[in-house]
Image (cartoon, rainbow, N blue to C red; front, top):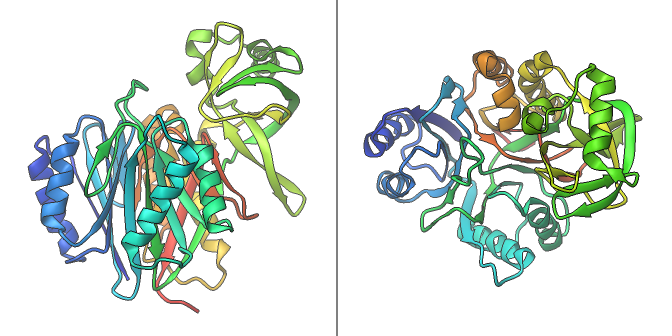
Length: 397
């Protein structure tokens, strides 16, 4: 099992893929699976066709990233294409993307793309060791529910919601056959070696909490019967001494999101985070993930320093997840775009921390509008302001 990465900021997409192919093929002459992450400024049609030309036997999954990408070579800001590849003659891999049909049930379509990816791997009826999940914004919880329903157990997931540069809908997904701005993509892994994983928020509950008493779609309308924005503004002012500017809610709330307890380990709770986006006309808060009526919502806090160091800590946690694991041969990480925008001047330090924790193994990391992963307690979840990491190790025990 060999993993290789490459990236290019060349303005010509054909040349960018050629440059990447040369570097990838120095390690992996015929990759079994390719993951491609790119900014909205890229010509996705050309990237798709050129990847297929250079890697005709490879399964492919592509997803757009916010304002740059990160690999073991470092952080790249702006126009970029980054590629991760794995070659594993004793393993099996598959990928699929579906364009959502508004006339059909999302749950059913999510099951379809999972089955297509498994069929594409040539291992029908078997349980994957890992799934990479990428969706366009809006249906992440439904897709996770479909995966649980179809497989019957929680399979480790590393995923991120497709992103663009300015939250304007310029995101996309692709595989070997299609490109879509409204869809679901998955890659399934049956590797010859082991994987280890981690999914963290790194934020702490501040104490204030309330019940979600009214929810409409992804808008949290009321907390404890009061307008949600009013309650959140009160909590924010008590914590910071500052007032929320509704026009700046997304940026101001990055260090103060809302959280729901997902589980606990050794008596310590852990949380899935939800990032407030906008104040709605009725005083609610539009979120980047779903909160359900009756759930307890906690006021959370973090620090800029934590967001910089967290990536390395999450990778270390993935290493520690498997006490018998050797040094990883490579990895995949997902880093929240909201966190990325907050710590942008320090992203080179984030890349260094992550690379050090990866033992300098090749890895790739897009910046996404939502993160999916499996907590160490076993739960798979979708959240915001999270980081997810998976490491690949050479041999089975």
